Length: 205
Ligand SMILES: Cc1cc2nc3c(=O)[nH]c(=O)nc-3n(C[C@H](O)[C@H](O)[C@H](O)COP(=O)(O)O)c2cc1C
Image 1 (cartoon, rainbow, N blue to C red):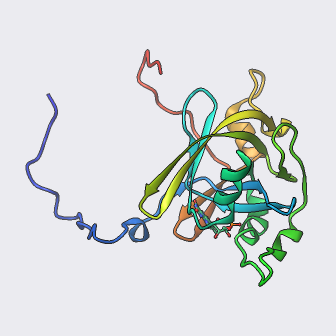
Image 2: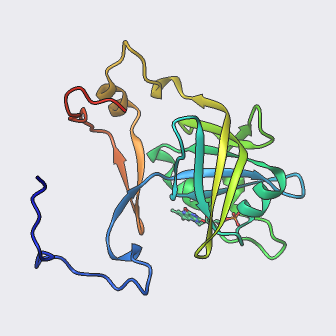
């Protein structure tokens, strides 16, 4: 039987849900750079932390504001790329959120070294450890001021130093190829120490 107290414990502060709750605590999130093709044939990159797999069958999604160029580009072009930066690339990652100039360009992007993606018409950020190329699968609008973008992965590339294999210890891999975590709202962490998850015995997905 589930053990249940009948009051909310004293140490808990109930938050005012007339406002977004996200500024009141820290939460662990990824931090990726989404790439899209601009109408003039150039490419855009923008950081996203509300991003994660959307299925076990190679769907990947992220939350995006419809007024962002990223949203308009991917809706028009039908695809996007995702580069997963390493902790060493935190400043470059942030630069991708820099303001646009009066002519609509984002000059800070010139600081980000890139190379072309293979299957989707797009770009990938050099020295990231993982890349996804996605065709647009579905857009779910009207989540407040935001939309959920879901892509189907049509190509994926991983740095061999960050690739899991039967011969390699997972903890050793993460130690030598640390992961970047975004701690909304406004901190980041480098993950280089990790532990085996204590699954219940006989656990299956
Ligand atoms: C660390 C960080 C995380 C962000 N996460 C998101 C996100 O998850 N969703 C979103 O819509 N915008 C997010 N943004 C904001 C946009 O990506 C950013 O304003 C960008 O410049 C929009 O560019 P675009 O108009 O070229 O798409 C984030 C910005 C930063 C700095």
